[in-house]
Image (tube, rainbow, N blue to C red; front, side):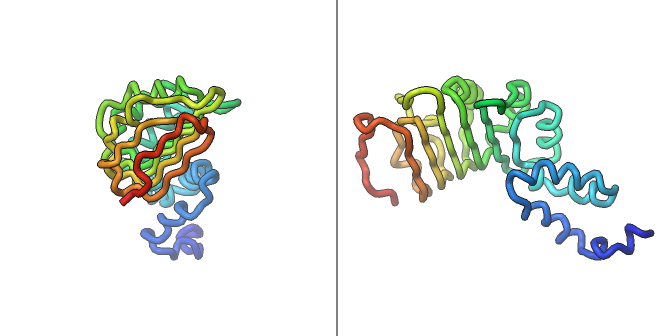
Length: 197
């Protein structure tokens, strides 16, 4: 009864379930889990909102599976980091692989072998992918002879490449509005189209 009459319990459930979306990115993951342990009402409410469970770091296999299950069919955000003390787990990533076509955001930070591992699992188009960041570290700029993901990125709006040189397909990047390129050798860059429509 005390919980029922608490002021926070007067917030409509559809409004309350939006609150975790306003947490800072680095706080969302840990605080979301904590919030599901406050009471049964909060747990049911938060678990029922798929958009809260879409950010995957693949640092724990069990946690990644739970997030995928709770995200239902919502578009996913995948962050794979392999540098310093931080490293994604390949087993956790394997549980994401069947859901790759749901990616709306992909961030890869690490050495070249991290990117190669990922591309071995991506054999399908990424029609929902809107943001792509690839930061290759611990090696000189790497040249990809073929366009990233075969150039099949029709929804891509934001592209950030660091330590990567690749061919960008002009015809299939019509939604691209932000392009950032860093850590490349000058003699390796060649711009053949100066304008994106």
